[in-house]
Length: 51
Image (tube, rainbow, N blue to C red):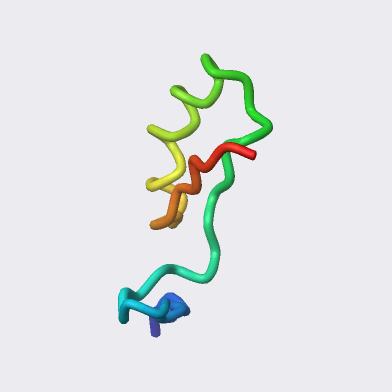
């Protein structure tokens, strides 16, 4: 049996995966490489917000 991803519903009603891949501390070149790979490992939310 495959587990269903856990989502959080925001104030606008959009479902956002509860587990995301944050990129804020990864150097630019590595970010480009990794963002292309993480969906293969189950991530559906890639957080690219800057601090």
